[in-house]
Length: 398
Ligand code: ADP
Ligand code: MG
Image 1 (cartoon, rainbow, N blue to C red):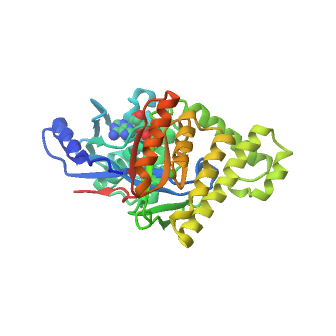
Image 2 (cartoon, protein in one colour):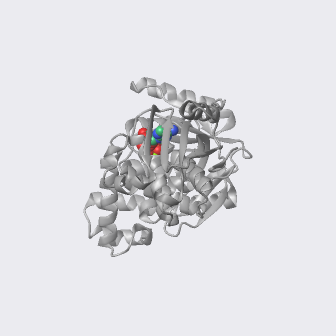
Image 3 (tube, rainbow, N blue to C red):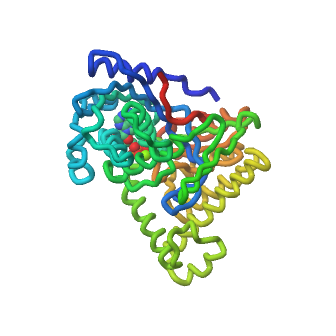
C-alpha cells in the first residue's frame, strides 16, 4: 500500500516559530505517535504492553529565553499561550482550567520536568516553543504522547536537565494525569521515547523495564495497516474511569496490588467473589497480559507471520469482556480478516479510534478495499486507511 506522503512538519514548526518571534529557532526536536501492537488496558494494571513508534511525529522549534517566560504556540491554535515559570506551581493541578486545553500538555511538561529534576523555576530562563504535527489526533495513535515527548526532549536539552528517557516518559504521564487531567498510563510516553526502527518496545509497566523486540514485518513480506474509523474517543474519560475502577475492584477481591499479580489459573476463584461485569473486565486484563508475553515469544521464535491469532483473540476480549469496542471497529476487524488479513484488532483505549490489521504486502490493497466496502454497506463514514512502519523515538533533529 502506498505510504502517506511525508509532510514538511518540521518546516511548519520553524515557520510558526518565526511568526511568533521574528527570528529562527535554536533547534528543532520531534517525537512520534505510536501504535500498540498488543496489550490494551494492561498498563495501569502494572502489566505488559508491546507498542511501537510510528513515522508520524510532532515537531517543535524552540529557542531559550532569559526572562523566565514560557510561550507556546501550535498550528492547532494560532493564539500563543504565555506563562511565567514561577506561576506553574499555582496553575497545576489546581487552576489548570485557566490554561487552554492543548497548552496544558507542553506547559504541564515544563512543570513536571522542573519537579522531576529538582530544578527551581528561577534557575532556568524560559523558552519559546512552536509545534506542528502530522500525528492524527484522537485516533488512538497518541498525538498526546508525541507533543509531550517533543516538549520533554526539547526542554530537557535546552535547560540541561539531568533526566534519562524513562524520566522524560514519567514526566509525560505526570503532565497528562495532573496538568491535563486524563487518567492514562505510561505506555504511550515510553513508546514515543524509546521507539526504534523495525522494533516494538516490550514494556513491563510495573518496573518500566523495556526490551526492544524486532518486528520483521517487511522482511516477512508483511505490512501493518491502520484503519482510522474517524470515531473520536470523546466518551473515553467516563468509560476509561469505569474500567479502571473495575480493575481495582478485581485486584482488591483477590487481595493483590494489581491485576498483574493475577494469572489465568486464579480466575475461577475470582468468579465466586465479584459480579459478572467485574469478572469479565478482569479476565480481559489477565488474558491480555498472557497474550503480550505470548506475542513476544512468538515474534522471537517464529517471526511475525504467526502472531495473527493473538491479535484476533485480543480484539474478541476487548469486544466481549472489556466492552470497549464500537461497531465501526468490529466491522473493520471482521472485514479485514475476511479479506485475508493474518490478524486484526482495535488498538488504543477504545470507544472509537483505530484498528490495525496485519496483512501480506500483496494483499494490503484488497484488505483496505474490503474494509471500505463494509463501512459503506453499514452506512459508516469512510475510514482513513494507511500503512505504518516502526520508526525511531523522540530526539533532536537539528
Ligand atoms: P490521542 O493521544 O489519541 O491523539 P488525546 O485526547 O490523548 O488523543 O490527545 C489529543 C490532544 O492532545 C488534542 O486534543 C490536543 O489538546 C493535544 N495535542 C496533540 N497534538 C497537538 C499539537 N500538535 N498541538 C496542540 N495540541 C496538541
Ligand atoms: Mg492520548
